[in-house]
Length: 586
Image (cartoon, rainbow, N blue to C red; front, top):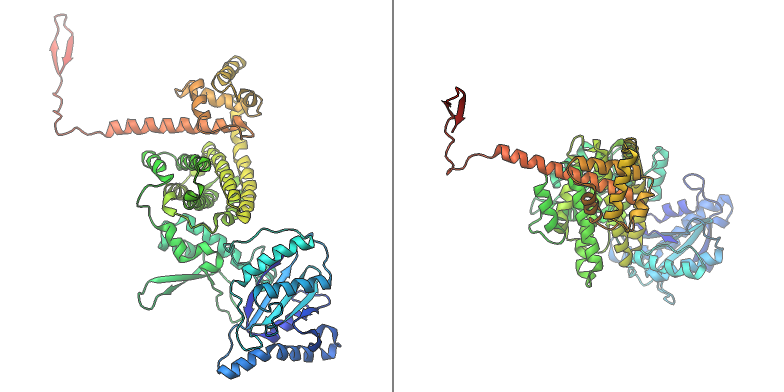
C-alpha cells in the first residue's frame, strides 16, 4: 500500500479532477467513501449531472471555510493549504470495499496529524474513490481552531501506518522507507511522458543522466559541463552574500510548460545524493589513506596498464575489504566506509556501462540504474575512504578502446558480481530492505551483462584447447593445485577454455600449478557457480599484469640515465692479436 503526499493551493481544481473523468477517462464512479463530517457534505459524485458543478463549488467552499477565516484574521494568504494523499494497493492485492477504504483513510489522517481521532478541531477532509485500487484523501490544512496542523514528517508517518494496515488487511507487505528514496513522478509527469511517447518521465531521465554525469566528472565544473553537453539546461543558484554556487536545477531538452518556459528540477528533488552538497563530498579529493584505500592506492600508483585491469584490481581490493569488515566484531564502526564503497561502486557501474562492449551496455545501464537505489541509505558515506575505487572507475570513461579486451571486461564483471553480492548482504544485515532489493535487481542485470561479454571469449578459448595428452597433464595440475575444487572445475563446461588459458599462462612463463594456486588464492571459489570461468578471468588478469610489470621494468631500464657518480665508459679500442685477429677491449 503506497501513500504519496503532496500539497497545493487550488481546492476547486483538485476536486474537479477527483470527481471528473480523469486525464484518460480512467475514473469510474467517483464518490466519497469517508469524510470529517459526512452528514454536512454533498457528494458531487451522487448528484444529477446538471448539479455537478454547483456541488463541486459548494464542497470547495465548505472545505475552505477555516482557510478563509484564517486569511481574514491574519490578512495573509494561507500558502499550500491543499493537502493531497493518494493511497494505492499493490498489483495483485485483493479488492477492498468502500468501508475498508474508509477505515484506511481515517487511519491515515490520524497518523499524519491532519485529523487525529477524537480531535473535533482537526482539519476538514474527504476521501474519494474513483478506481478499484486506490483512493484520494484531500484536506484543507487549517484546523477548525485556525491553527495549522502538526503534520511534520507526514510522509513517513503515512508510510508507517500503511505498513500496519497491510498486515491487518492481509495485503502485500511493501518495504519500509528510510527517507532516502527519490521523489516519485507525479501523475501529471507520467501523463505528459505518455502523451509524448516516452517510457520514462522527465524527472527519471534527468536523474539517470545526472548520476552518469557525476560518475564521469572529476569536479563540479566538469559535472555541469557534461550535463550541458547532453543538451540539459543548467541553472545555478548563487548566494547573495558569498557569490558562490549554493544549488542547481536542471531542465531536459525540449521540456517546457504551457507558456513555453523550461521546466526545471532541483538536484535534490531528483535524488537526495544529487544535491550540490552531497556531490561536493564525492568530488573532494582524498587527503589520507583510510580503510580500503591504503592498499588500493599502492596498486593504482604502481600500475600503468590497461584501465580495465586496474579497475578490476581495485574491485578485488574492495571485495576483500568487505569480507574483512563482515568478519569483524564492531561492524557499525565501518558503516560509513562501506557506504562509501557502495557509492564508488555505483559510479563504476555507470562508467562501465559507457565504456563496455556494445553487446553488454544495455544490461549494464540497467544494472547501474537499479543500483542507484541501493547506493542511497541513511548512513553518511565517508567518501574519501573509497577514493581509489572511484578514480579507477573514472579512468574507464577516459580510456579509448578500453572495451576491446573482452577478457579484461569479463574479469571486471566477474569481480563486480562478488562485490554486489557482498553489498547486498551488508544491506540485509543493516535492515535496508529497499536497498537490498535494488541490489538484487542490479545483480540480475549484471549477470546478464557478464554472460553477453564472456560468451565470445569462452568460445574462442575452447576452440583452441590443447591436445588430449596436454589437457590430461593440465587436469592433473588442477587436481594437485586445488584438490577441493578439482571435480567442479573439471566438469565445468568452461574447462576446455580454462585448459587453453593455463597453456597460455605457461607460455608466458608461469607453470600451471603456481598459476592455479595464485588464482584460487585471490578469493574463495565456494560461491562460484562456474569455478572454471572464474579461474579463467583471474589467470588472464594475472598474466596481463605480469606482462605489464615486465614491460614497465624494461622501459625503466631503457630510460635510466647515468648518475652523477657514474664515469662514462671509455671508447673501445682494438689491438692486433698474434694470430692476426682483432680483439676489442675497453
